[in-house]
Image 1: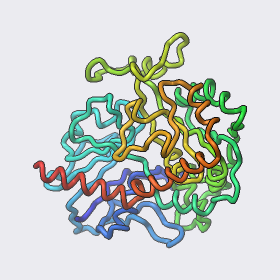
Image 2 (image 1 turned 135 degrees about the horizontal axis):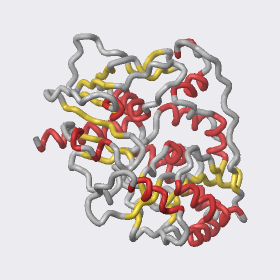
Image 3 (image 1 turned 180 degrees about the vertical axis):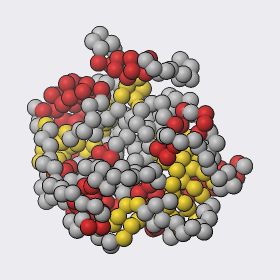
Length: 368
């Protein structure tokens, strides 16, 4: 099997676009010794001083072409239908390219934030953010000898779910486990023209991940007993297949902030729930806390188990979940953290994610 990645243009070297899904897959193909190239050089490895993905020779012909949805933001879709064509839909939001008919010409679409309450095409498969080698290596480098009895809160975006959790859940934990919501000092950066000129490994990753890399954050992650990894938005479950258009999308997106509305898993579901923080927390020594994945419709290729690999709030019963967390012994907490680490290594390293994609390709070929 030969792979060709089609990576969106990244014209500004000082404003990198980070394509995590591409990085994870390429690292997996490299591990599995599957040949691959890209339409451009991408993801500079500052340790080995080489690109993970090299630009394909002019005569290169792949068996499988892999695209990101962003490749078609301002252009018509043109794909070689004599090849297997795969689309990676990693966009935020409920209504992404996985919902558009024009993308159904792809053989497979891997969708981040896949939710069982949405009526997808059979071509659409769940996609995990998963672990990259950068995440694995940096977490291993920043493990600490002793953890603090606290909850780490380190959010970037202001998701409605996060606002609800900050107001209604974190205060219930604070009595026993203080909330650490301080933020890291950003790494110092300087202008440069070529990523190859950046000698510091962490600064290189900082640029290439669009400011998402900081070793101090990973150290704090390892050093906290729990980490709040909530993310996403809550919407009413559809009566039929969703066909909403603006401005109704925004109304539904923000309605959970309106007073007097009772939110429960019977009538609502969660979208845009996945994040790097969830996977980072699983591999680190901390215990991730989120909503219960299965109850709220979240779908991953292999599902984690609430209370075994992570802790999930059920039906927005923050009080019951807080009582459960406060009742756990340190030994039980450590066991959940260890279970999560073992589970994510078994299922979501780059090599495992690549195997999942290859299996889905083989299934698709058999059905044709």
